[in-house]
Length: 362
Image (tube, rainbow, N blue to C red; front, side, top):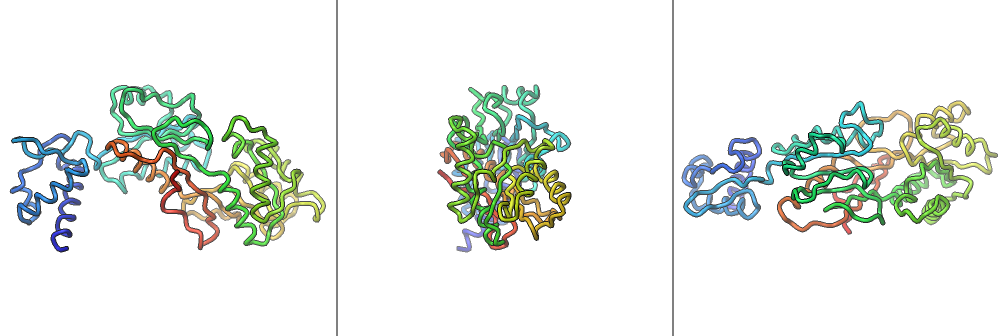
């Protein structure tokens, strides 16, 4: 047990040296005797530590050539986040999910000192050049399939966000479960004793997950999830509108101006862009939040107080990004990984419902 602790300390020390550039990629490590002196241990214990790092793909032992760091050690990596409909700078992004992804990207090196990640748009010439010469260790792509970066022949592993049921087009495919979103919203609203539920939907959600579904089928799926969870959602209580259009407030008032016995007690807002105009409309109607109406909205946990008293249902973005990076690193090392990751939603207003540490794997 004591030797195992010493070996683990040595392994961590060498990993840190590789990540910080003390021992650069493809360079030779000092001899085992020299390393034993550096780490104040015996050559036999150092041999065990070298064996661990060799088996994990960080080192390679050459015949009569000593031990070297591999060209692409797992302690170092250059990754790209590519978003098809948003620019690489925070000011270019208007979606909370994308903003928090960019924040998480900027902090990657805090968790993985030798790793770096940068955000790009798909048509950036510099990104294309890096892909062409195979200078990236992995790409995480969010967007439509026709803008996906072409990594053919480069050996660069690719993780993609995709809709469930759509063809897979990455080495790892990330799916955000919209059914889980509605189920989590219904649980949160039932806890607040608000079971008469209306929905403002952006037409994406479930409908775009399979091209064969019409908007009517999509709304039927939403009603089925809400009703099976113990909520009540008549067909007229689901309104379709574009989130950034002023009409979203109009659609909210259509639901809330009904007779008290024929209007919802709660609204589920599928897109966080709905929130500002809807809150303004509710205040203009003289309703209180959440006394008269409860609101569940797509949100992402960034540790900040929103101040609007709405229930947030989403997921912590940073753990999601770290899981994708872990999958890309496994692919880079030739390890077999899951083809699809399904990331569930969490109710952040419920302290007993913490974000999951790992996604569901299918």
